[in-house]
Length: 317
Image (cartoon, rainbow, N blue to C red; front, top):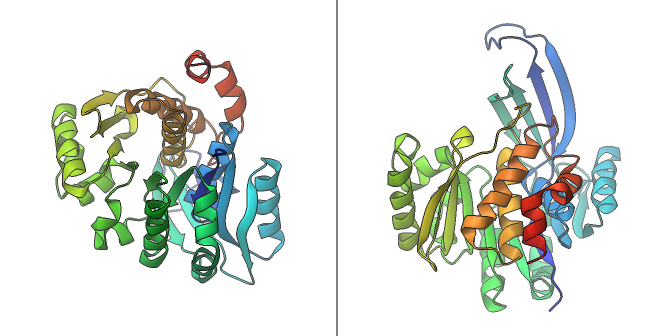
């Protein structure tokens, strides 16, 4: 079967404010404000395309000038946008983010898109899409109906699904959605909620064992939890390997795209056949390159990958 990765998720337009000096939440702050293309699904689709994987993107978009700009950027990356549905309004979301003087997220407000068009698309053409795909990437917190439709079709056609959370609203209400995922990747604060533990303040050995227990209880194949500047911990139930992956030295500009970038790099590695302990190295590198940019995606990702020794050794295996 021809390799095709279908990414099912949202498009957002991100409004980011960067504080120039010490950020004060109760007063006016001088800095820079930028609008960039975002959304978990869109970010991942762009990253994976820049990592040389063939991508079909499933989403909805506003039928407006801004929506056309988003679509043009996707098409310029050779992403198949046949399954992106234009909507008169609220086809894509908005994310307002404030970054402090260090580039760390200080606060945010998210406005979700209306998901009816995406839901209709998956009902009408979901089987066609999943059947044509070799792998599926799913933003799990769209709604329960979309998630269950995708997971049911993936099980029917034996397609591996890689899950990424949006806001955990759906996953917390329906944790059985995690069962059977090839890999689920979240951050430590999300792990606190999912595991019902103070995961953030455990040492890495305790985190690894807590992660392994959760993977076995939920029926996941593998899982990774990112820890910010402390790296990531991972567990693979097939190999029973667990471990900790440290970060590489970078200059932090904007941390807000790091999670999507880590997910993208790790999933790319897994799709190319790397074991999880090597795939997370890919994720760590892609996240590091991304947080050195003011955008939600690294604009030089393809060039960085081609110049990186580890990626080149991995690609010629």
